[in-house]
Image (tube, rainbow, N blue to C red; front, side, top):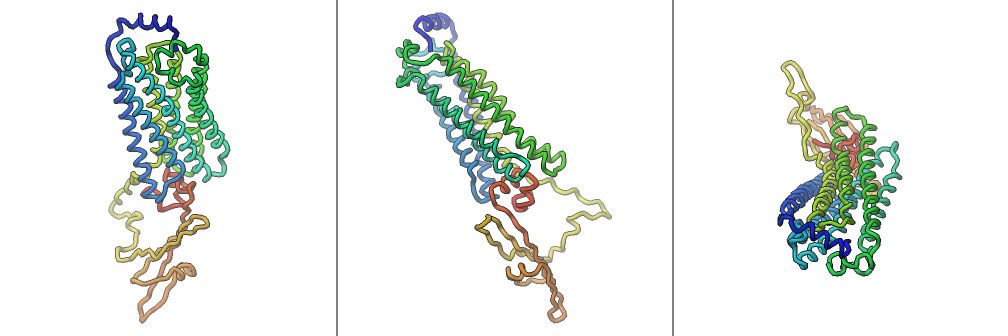
Amino acid sequence: MPSTEQLVKIFAKLTKAPNVTQGPLLLKVLWTLLAFSIIIVALRIWTKLQRAHRLYYDDVLMVAALLVGIVHAVMVTVAISKGFGRHIIHLSIPQIEGTMKYGALSLMFGWLSPMLGRVAFCCTIFYLTKTDSRVWIWPIWVFIVMQVAVNVVGVVVFYVQCGTELDIFWHVQKQLNYEKFCWDPRIQTDYQYLMGAVNTVTDCFLAVIPAILIENTKLSRKAKTTLWFLLCLSTLAMISSIVKTYEAKMLSEVTDYTYNLCSYVIWVSVEINIVIITASIPFLRPLFKRPRLPVSRPGTRNRLDAAPPSWRSHIQLGSALSTKNSSRIKVHEHSTQSASVSSLDAIFGTTTTEEIEGITVTREVQVSYEKLDAPSVHAALVGLVQGEMANPGLARR
């Protein structure tokens, strides 16, 4: 925070500053990005409920990240209504104090939202990693703990640096005695650089681990490339984190806060929404149908031609959900004649043939086994082979 002499110099330089505002631009960026995040998270939740019929820890954390991001946008919007985005020389004392108050309080939500989003994606990667024994799980826990510890401490450091004088951030008169009550502002800047470095490394980790999982699966190169695109989008979050970290220098510089901090707030919003969007997009894959098989040429037959005639019935006999291993058993019947077959018949025989008054009846029983544990469900939804094999019903149709 500036001293009295520094404030005089700042206002002297700003006497000729134009009376313009960056508020409208800031509002467009904030709410446009947030609208995309809300849509993507809503589709993610809808897909999980439609396909898996439940939500998991990563979904709860992602919704929490979105809600915290909304609070951040609301507080910045209030700050803009007070004058944030304009040069400080054109604001009255009440406007300056209102702007700085809501601006300072919004920072907490701007830091916690991407933290929750990264922890949510760490949980997703944790589920996916449990389907491949070749990939270590313990590094994921390290990054989860590191994310929470570094970012929460960063919030605490920012708000306790002036002791009990929290309102020094927005009371102009108290800011004249900033050096008397508060730590060296370079401490805050240095810790912001540490937070940025940890967040950037986490984003890099969250891009590398999915690439390893994809490479280990038995898929075509085209399918792997598609999954890489979906699961490795954390590289975009990494870029936004780097830029935001660079802009963090504005927090401790003696400057025209109400105008110059707009670029930092924009990049905070970009980071929040990119983390939320890139961590949720992989779960939208089931919404898109597989390409249709090409129409066969005359004289050739494909798998559709070889399908049974339409008069063959496909009857679901029953299903049971195991509480021990969260698994589902599905029993289906193909029959040339409508018949009632009990689940017990399906267990003790796969194909039976009997003759009734000269009519031959063939019963074909198919038993499929689906694992409904979190790792298998997540692997199936994002398109990993091991998940689709364990959960054929969750595979993209």
